[in-house]
Length: 396
Image (tube, one colour):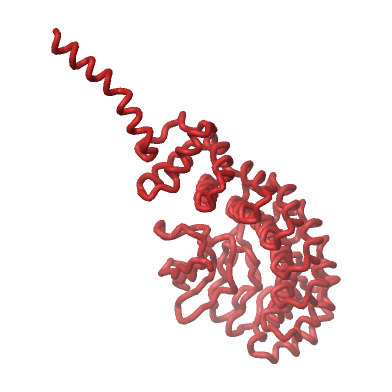
């Protein structure tokens, strides 16, 4: 009996010692649902764990904060204010990992006095459509941010919503006159993504076809193509763009004229002249066929219709005979195969031998080992769309 009493007493005496020991090592604390206090001690403990040298300690803390959403969001907001630059970077990455539940916090951070925080917040929102549809007022405010990167990325976030961003057409039109070409490009790209519902922007886009920056000019042409026949008033500017010094502007101008269709009758002769340029011949011929209302084009080497700026559909595979000049992605009419890409595509599909090459971003990772924001070159079998390989390059 005495022996049992001594053992019990020793255990009781050891408890305060053990508590003090583990308290000096924050990484030894397992995450639990009650760890999200905003007290100074709690904040200090989480900071120590998130910047610890031990990668397992850091990973455990990050996972606990992600899993603890939404209760962990107030704590994450407070951690951003700790004055530790490295902790700020880590915390913003955790918020990004949380995704949709973090949207209210990200909206709040769009008003943060720190440019770096606003940049990270709006960049994270680019990846969260369609759940960002309801926060368009906040994104429209961000279009006026004093930092051009924040303003441009706000336009990108709106563009990622596609036609659902139609309530923001007016704000994007005003942004077309921004002093920074980065912002103007993405404002035009966003209007291109909205498509026919951006018809009210046709006049401003027509003026943007003469922008001093080539990227803005071809993005404006792309947006006019997305609007279609309702952009008929822009035909004179698009005809002038067929003479642009930059090939991509000429290509997109021809595509826009074709998308406008019969109302672009005045462009017939300029398009015939443009067809003398081998680099523009197929696009000009496609546009002429559309203007003429021809259902099927005459055989050409590579009859490609203009690609939308943000598209998950592939171009039809070139065929012999009479290839289609239009298609329906909803019903599948004239679609050989399709593939889901990221929310951005870079350039047009390139077909070489029996392979289709596509440039996109890493919004839909095919390799779980690569999750960061990257540029991706993907290769697919032309016959059936089978994925062959990809090359991933992190963004600089």
